[in-house]
Image (cartoon, rainbow over all chains, first blue to last red; front, side):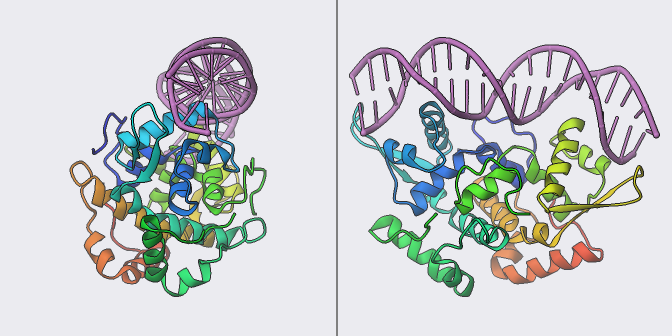
Amino acid sequence: MTRTSDACRSHCPINFVLETFGDRWTLLIVRDLMFKQKQTYGGFLESDERISTNILAERLKRLEAHGIIERHGPKGQRQVYALTAKGRDLLPVMLEITAWSARHDAETNTPPDFLPAYEANPDGVKAAVLAQLNGDGVDPVPD
Amino acid sequence: MTRTSDACRSHCPINFVLETFGDRWTLLIVRDLMFKQKQTYGGFLESDERISTNILAERLKRLEAHGIIERHGPKGQRQVYALTAKGRDLLPVMLEITAWSARHDAETNTPPDFLPAYEANPDGVKAAVLAQLNGDGVDPVPD
DNA sequence: CTGTATCCTTAGGGATACTG
DNA sequence: CAGTATCCCTAAGGATACAG
């Protein structure tokens, strides 16, 4: 895909992710797909942050255009969304973000169950999440 | 500090970072401080993405309010900005973001020098960057 | 229920002038 | 040069109605 129809303000790798995720909503969809076992339009709408329908639809299209997610399902029917390999590859970023938040906002932001396990053995937790993205499993990220 | 006067849409750790960094500019300042040895107003202004003066000033205030950066210097004089411990602690996130971009945008986004070293020995690169944030060193992130 | 479309308000942010 | 202030416009996004 590579920087599709972006502004491309620079060729910096940090800027590159901002071109896709530099807003208050996009990353929440990735979170829902990665940790919350949500994969439908309605599921995303239910999340605590209360994304509105037009924003959700727009972000789903953008994420698909960027090759982060893909949609499955007969056209005109209920679609099921899933992370692509590129999207799943965001896992280390997501986990480090989660760890940082847990460390620096302990009061309002309770550390998720897997956090101690992640600090001790990052690769183990990564493998577990990835495995669950294929098969089934339990929610590793409680709000 | 903890979620100062934020909207606080939820208590999710992913959402928590979005409350501070969910825009197209804020993370670039952290990048400049962390990897580019920039620590002045004018330095930030020079970056490729061309942040405008009002946005820069506003973001510097926000980052300071969130305890991510601190400013040093006699009042009314030229200020020097630096990452706090909380800000430096974003290093793993920044490195994973950089690695992801390099992996998925190889065409326009040349892998930075340290990337191979980071993949092989993450902690070594982290230590090197942290060391340099105190003393001196060479730029580990070329655009 | 899965989306799409529309309306409308606010916030983000570009340009630029200005002050110490 | 460091930082503030203003003007103005566009994009982000909330609410909600609508369609398959």
